[in-house]
Image (cartoon, rainbow, N blue to C red; front, side):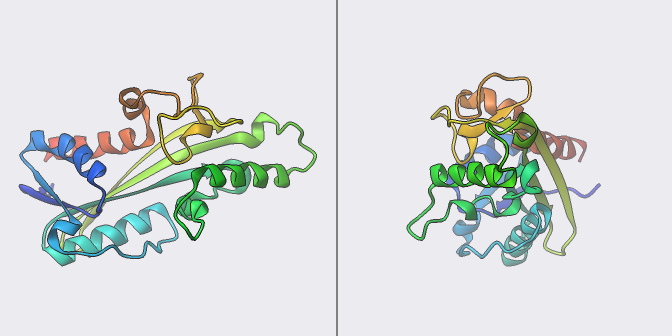
Length: 208
């Protein structure tokens, strides 16, 4: 099994993600840096699937730094919308003046209602959704591994909670009475789609 080595570049400029990854890999003797620390600018994320986008970001970082790179792509898939917004989750929040997730959540609600105009209120079957996270670990020569995680649930209205971000206030995971926007961060991180994907990555590092 190919080893990562003692250095890893995170294909992101997000300092929050850096702290999260550092906590994960430091026990394995791996130092993490971000793409911007290597003078790399952000690139357009134009993959059509989570895995494609994650591979694109990791590939750019790995080739640009000569180090193994880790990237992630994540989003919300709504069953009634054939998996949308999916890989375009963040795009649905774009306003031309920054991102507005309250607007994006209203958009999802409107599209679901339009999907079945006779549904009033929208029946539970039309509200099923899942959060997906895909991690890609890539070496400079292009070899890569993908780790996927998902958490199933359904959408609720009105929005509830201020603890999360993105679409968290309308997503209620199965088995919980709260939305991701109402669940404290430490609890959410233990059950989220990202936690599932990270657990698979951590298992790989431990095996290596």
